[in-house]
Length: 337
Ligand SMILES: Cc1ncc(COP(=O)(O)O)c(C=O)c1O
Image (cartoon, rainbow, N blue to C red; front, side, top):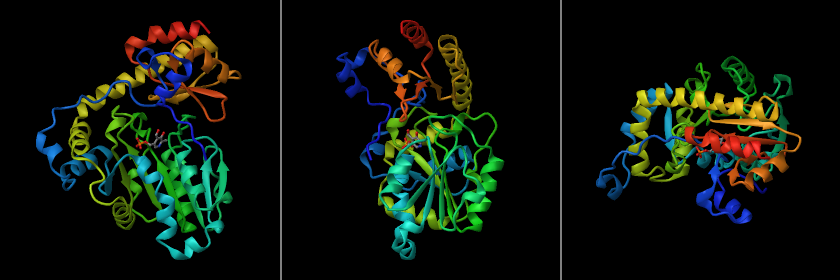
């Protein structure tokens, strides 16, 4: 399964024959302002990363959840979970085609890629699967809020879905990579202490630190032990732990970042509305707009060295949030198309 991702600036720059430094890259949902990198003691670089105690303490406070495992980006878990689910249980592995995995029609496709490799039966849903639709041996993957659609499923609805999954002894995986900027807390991370729920969080998006490769899995002890054993030793580097700890414990910076992202994303959605006369949908980390000629507009923006994300169905464009000083350039490029 071939997957297109944002953040492929070098190859897009080559394709359009414009030097990479000249581009405005809005192709990802990563915050345009990152947590300031503190100076990192040389011992942190020199030693093998040790226990996660300080990182865990700040993460537990930030996520309001006591059962967390630091991982090398949530992607590292997404790509391994299907194998872990099936091969920790030989009975399930022997009949993978009888397991139904419910995936959003639109959403981060790495989930689907990983599950497809295992021969399970894939069933697509819009927004949220209906309870009646769920089969006995079910795994439900929910991306909340959805990337790129921006749709948020309320906590009440997710918890009702969890009850339905529990009754079928299934597994609910909630990918909350874009949850950090949601206005009132809709995360189900604190409920992830039963064997039927795994919640994934990413430090890359909201903190603007995608290169750090840091994320968290929240689940019951058995699941966390299985993921930890699968990761092997030293999955999260010392510098990632050091910077992650500072970022997760700096609530003043987090508050400032939230306000700044909300105001910039509102400004972006107003700009898109003024140009296309269509309301965008999204989060404070990206805005997505459905357009009949999305592919053509993508191309016209690229010709002006503005790189956005053409969605997989090629019917929408997802715009990452521009930094304050990049709005005028984006506006000009949009007005030129
Ligand atoms: C919805 C979603 N989940 C998870 C990820 C993986 O992010 P990371 O591995 O940086 O935590 C991405 C990356 O774009 C994403 O869009």
